[in-house]
Length: 225
Image (cartoon, rainbow, N blue to C red; front, side):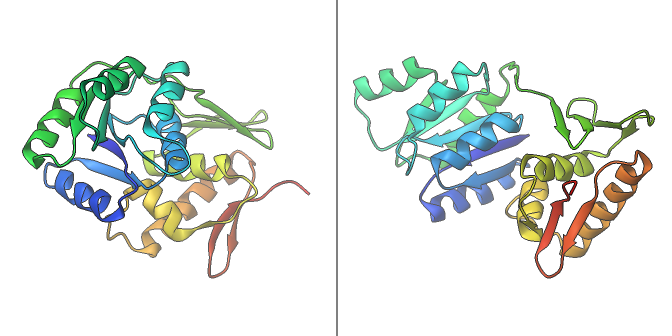
């Protein structure tokens, strides 16, 4: 199971990541609404734990935008506001459940498990293109020109997706590690470099674009001059 935690109290978010890890649940944690919305719209999570009050974009705004896009990932709202009207507003907006702070960790875990058992359909554009390269997120196949399509491994796919979505930007090794393996991982940068090496070979096999190394920083997908 993989969930997203959107919580601006950093210590609480990090504590929740450790808590769910004990239940064999992988969690990505972000601390502002805009980044939370971006991940929720691009990654097929099993559930989202979402604080109602966030900087930049509040939790209710995130729920509204996700539902408008047809994304039905179950959402658990966290809030210190416990009036009936607040709970009703959150549920009417499109959230699936509502938990008032402070809460018992056992109850939080039970609610996450309950939400993750609900059938959902993650709807998003599964075809990415960059400089003539076509990448299908569902089949993990890449195509370029008339070359035969090539399948990527799950982690190669996550790396390539991140590079395409941030084309023209230099992504640090840590950013890529956090995205692919999670914030609490102890994966070394050398492991990432190995996956990037294999991904480069896959791209070269279809004569696709190049992944450029930015020494001492990370990687970027090279655009045609």
